[in-house]
Length: 107
Length: 121
Image 1: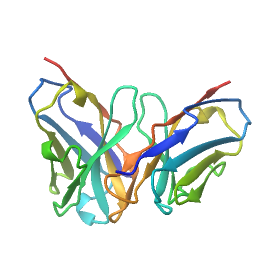
Image 2 (image 1 turned 60 degrees about the vertical axis):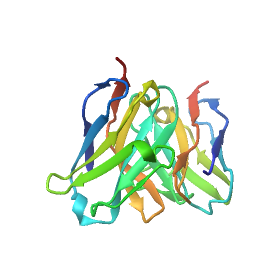
Image 3 (image 1 turned 45 degrees about the vertical axis):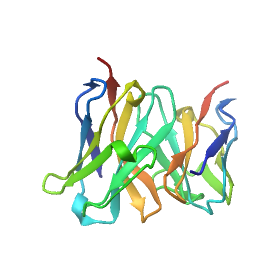
Image 4 (image 1 turned 120 degrees about the vertical axis):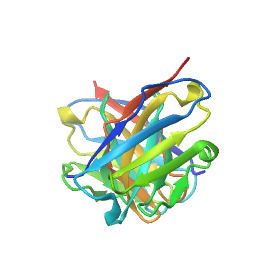
């Protein structure tokens, strides 16, 4: 199985901050990576697919980059609605695996 | 707008079979182009993909759960289902159904609200 790691595990930030979350794969996954946002008690929401493609309806302050084994999710200016947990997911090979999550909370 | 909703018992006894159904609205399962998936999340933990099924009945399961998982689809009801046998407390989790886009590399673009299943006697 391809293992996914994320850093940091928790990030404290303020509204307006630029936030970057890193996801690493245990082997190359090309650009087969998605990012999700999850709020407490809710299902995950797709933000980014194929490493850098923005899902329809997702604000443009979210962006993704990377390929191979290292990827980043960037929020250019953190908004109150963005405080949540973020997960990456590889879909290069079965079984599809998720990272452990990065919680973004209020500083 | 596609919507998915999970249904099934919230409490299952150890060694029994967990059974859940996902009802899809706003789109037809049999239109093709998507895989229909189950994903679970242990309390306070990350996400684990369980498997997916195509409208034709083709399935692929997470190898770590494969021996206990069965998925089926009922296109007439626009539903798909999950059965997980021989459950233990370790199977206590929120279970999500989701639509998976791609072939065969998939990501999950629509999710149900999730349903908590507790395994306890």
